Length: 84
Image 1 (cartoon, rainbow, N blue to C red):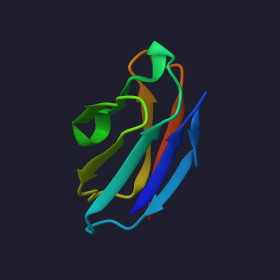
Image 2: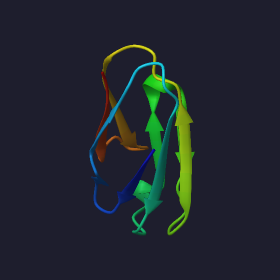
Image 3: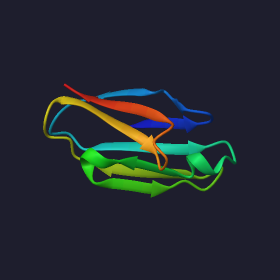
Image 4: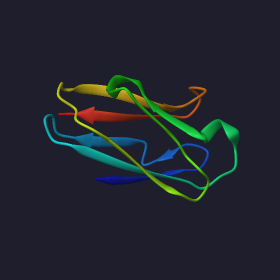
């Protein structure tokens, strides 16, 4: 489990997880920029609306090792999940 702050980017921007273990990323958006109001994890079929100041959990089960991006809805803010 990790908490990711959203303010002009993602902090931390890289999350390391193990394959076959459930993951919960909790996003907290600390800005009003419309660019960051959605987070998308395409590889895991997940996306979430991020209201300003709210804690929003996103859960998924990574099965295949690799590096998978997560982005804002516009693709400008970028982070990654590393599965190893």
